[in-house]
Image 1 (cartoon, rainbow, N blue to C red):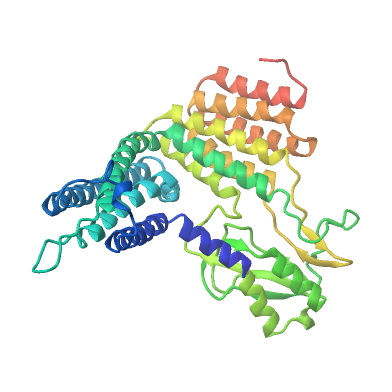
Image 2: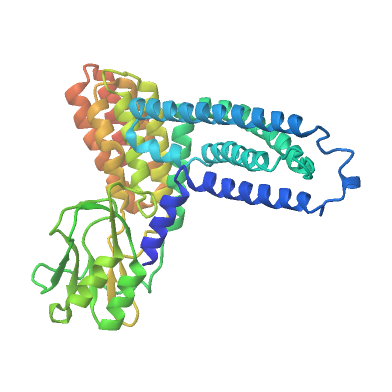
Length: 436
């Protein structure tokens, strides 16, 4: 339940409607409250004579009509610019970064300020009354003054948005945002203790000959989040061991195993339902528990930059730099324990590993960039740069990645000097070659 609520809140928080909706509601309440207070003469005139709006009914209506008409036009322009930015970023970089634009607080806030000011102005406009018979004219002077202040604030937000929209589609800004979010996810999820790790227990007690009962998915989707605490609690209460099968971010088909449960005789329909509820499936990957999602985003940008239609190796090299930054952050933190115990083993997680992240980071980039000497050199330099900063346990994975890079370079590069550069980098890492 907790994982589902977290995913639901993330969808709401990162949408383009939540913050504008909250600001619009606040504006509506403010308009109703201020005009009601003025109508009942709760605001003494002597306190507002020096600064409040001093025009009559027609003047107030003219000001409010101008504000409302101008703001709805500007709001349409801002929305159009946002859509164009989304289209440009999607086609030039990768569709997976669209979430970053819709979740951008600046875009949400600008749209919210414009729509809220428009709503406030309309609600104030409806309270302006001309003299009719014995009814005296009514002009909410404070409310009209606040509308003028809000439109000045909106102009400031418009200037900010123009600059922000221009910067937000620059690849350096996109990479910085994705890398920063991924680093924060690494810091949040590594480690994530649930129960206690047992250092004396073997790494994974699952064996092919061990009897277990699979719990399968009933629908297709990407694994977005797992409620590890719920699975651990289920194992503790039922004296079971629940072993997670897929990684977060994997795509599951109906009938594929979500988890395996030991012993099989302890598995009933209630256990199966509880396990399924702990796994949140959705139509796309999300960064909530998926530290590999940001790596895939940056790798996709690098691959798109290396395509013949774009041919932008500089962007690909910037992506390699950021991938090295993320891998260093991931490799230098303690991995969350796979086994969670409380007296005995109850839950076996499937956390992301450095070796898997390394393959996701450079697998596709190596494949499409092996024929570009500058990209090959940057990958080799990045790997040899982070290797001394990593724990000894991860250096074999880095050396294996350099081996694969060397094999691809020998196949695709025509310049023997560039191949020799990769060979020298691999030799330096293994301590058997001269410095280049």
